[in-house]
Amino acid sequence: MKRYGILLLILLLGLSGGRAATFSDSTVVSLITCSPGPEVYARFGHTALRVRDPLNGVDLVFNYGVFDFSTNHFYVKFIKGETDYKLAAYDFRYFLPEYEERGSSVWEQRLDLTPAEKARLIDALLVNYRPENRVYRYNFVFDNCSTRPRDKIEEAVDGRVDYGGGQTARPLTFRQWIARYVGTDTWLMLGIDMIFGLVSDRPASLRESMFLPEVLMQEVEHARIVSSGAGASERPLAQPAVALVQGGSGPLLTDSIGWLKPLPVMWLLAVLVGLLTYIARRRGGGWRTGLRVADTVLFVVAGLIGCIIFFLDFVSLHPLVGDNLNVLWLNPLLLPMVVGVWMPGTHRFRQVLGGLLLFCMAAACILYIICGQSLNAAFVPLWMMLCLRVADAVFPADGAD
Image (cartoon, rainbow, N blue to C red):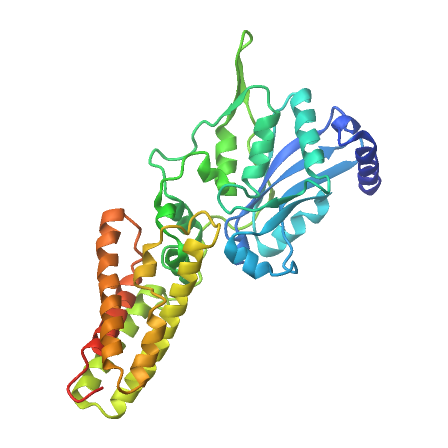
């Protein structure tokens, strides 16, 4: 029955220009929220809208989170912030199995809309589902699978949606919100902190924090529709959430085991590099060669990270990567230092380039304090390693080139 209902819906959609008249008065529209999963793209959960018409045997999900890995130059476009997502509409029975399999919870909040509001919302979804309208430029914070359903709901109601404030009194920054879902001591968060700039340390407003599906669900739980004018009234936006799938609880996921977390690993590497530097300066010989190998790995890795940060800061359209002070010490100019490490007779080159790098590294410390960019604790030993090795190249031991 559902299959025939969907086929009928698609046929009537084409004939009626995307109107909701094909739905009966028993239709229910719900906000669907899915808890986070283990994959990177699923770490923050997901939101969709469900349209269920028992009389006509229709049960559809409208999903704004569909993207295609096979798109030409997908990863280049993703890094540049030019990823296109699209709205997909399909039978709801195909939606839940993915979340059941990965152990995520799925909640449903039935929207308390009037027949007119319900019709407007469905109309908007059907128009948005037209081939010429369904693709949109995805923005991780300001235009994603959570904000789009919220906006469609707000546009459909008579009046305005007043969110009761499920949030705490102190607003969190974008970086802090993301850390809640990634963890503060994970390798993923270390990478995020490297590429996120000052923009991410701005407190997110109540509305902006709804880019996270679970935050939107919490706010919808307390939201009310407020109408103005002579017949001013106030009513709940949605009914309490009902669990469709009982999965794991809590958004926080980890990618580290025991001591294999960024901070202890970075401190261990810093100690080893410090000891190797001390021994090589005292004994020279083969120790010096080993130190050159360590320098090559350190400078290449840090320099390549610096190139990524530079690209994201000045080229990418991602909203949270701008004004990144990390580029001062995770600097692309570390790459040419590899040449100075291995080639004899380059002491003057190392002095000039190394002096510039040391100045940038010192400036980063001062600007962190002045500008208030958040500092990942694992940055400290990494910064110390880079300072030590650049300084050793600028001021080599006696007899070393």
